[in-house]
Image (cartoon, rainbow, N blue to C red):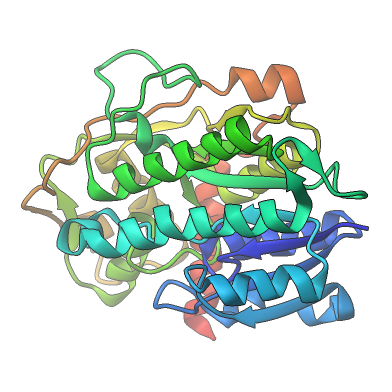
Length: 338
């Protein structure tokens, strides 16, 4: 029976995945999270119904002794590694913590897995032959696109922020452990996620929060930066497929094929809120739009070619942006009422 160490499982994507994998399998999960500002146990409400199949450990992936102890005491068979510093603005203000958590933390996890599962390079201990390390990464490692083109798995890495550079570094360390030691590892690189449980600092929750508070909606620069938006549950499905049947040593891009400018995102959310939660007095939420100074090194466009995971693993996004964003706004409205 698989016993998966999920790192960062109290954060946005990690917590959604914990719910997903517990509901969609009979695997057990040990959730390791430092509960920094980006993680919350409230994201894990309901997991208690899974009883002994779920356990939470508060701790830092950079604590090598703790990580090795978890492998030993829990009999960890697999790792799905979400834990990361992930906000670009914060990486500009404090790059060092991003390098420490995202690069060094990943290396320490890889080493713990190697020691627990392998007796020598390319030699697995008995019963550990199928154990897997799955690293969750981002499309930001590829840099920025022009008006056309898509990121594929063969796109050269060209990170432009301290955050994306640290994630690129972690990807390379995972690759190195596969090539040097034979560790069974896969990498998935996703486009911008949205959906329930996302931290309030991110773009879509910021729009919703600003609207509900009746304050200015901050939009960087001219608002024409483009992102490919992926509903978080679709991402979780893709992760599960790559984890279970992806080929060792391979990377898989997961994207929603939903390119939108930041201005289009603001307009759509304001339109939904005008319908679901009118401001009163005939005012529109779009009147709150406010342009602010652009982010340093702000990439212009991201877009993913998800053909590989679609063709090889049979993954398909179930939500388009129009359906997913309504579900997302409704979730935040329910939370605001509680």
